[in-house]
Amino acid sequence: MTPSATRSRRARAVAALVAAAAAAILFGVAAAGGEDAPAAGTTMVEITAHQSRFTPASVTVPAGATVRFVIHNLDPIDHEFIVGGPEVHRQHEVGREAHHRGELPGEISVPAGATVSTTWTAPSSPGPVTYACHLPEHFAYGMAGVVHLTP
Ligand SMILES: [Cu+2]
Image (cartoon, rainbow, N blue to C red; front, side, top):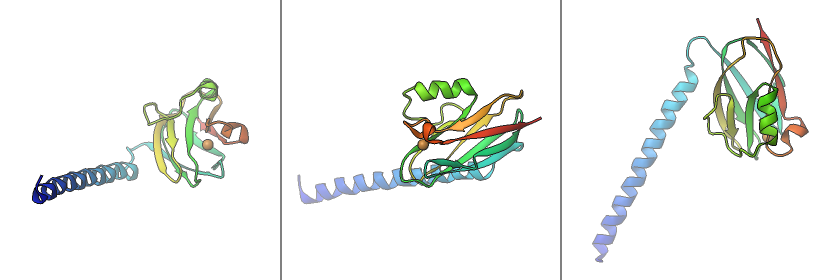
């Protein structure tokens, strides 16, 4: 291969990378726009994960509300945010689901240093609802909080 052919191939590879990066930025901006503009009627809740604890440790939302949780992980380790009733937490505490990419409402992995969000519908009837991190030992350590429902 001639030197100029090598250069040309490299230039195309670089161009492809630049295009991919631009697409990622565009997608990121679109996603960020979604964060800033929740649908009308959505209750926003911000949660911070720090030193393997959630702050606040309890939140109050209207029963039946659509709730968008925005979770900031200030720790240098990964966490996850799982919200639901006792059965949801039982499953996750014994389960081996290492990653939650947003397939299910109210279940999301929170990588170290990242901010993620998940939208979930609060139950319309009273009952215990909590959020927790079920990575090994985190729940036992106390990485959990309570969702209070108002009528
Ligand atoms: Cu955790």
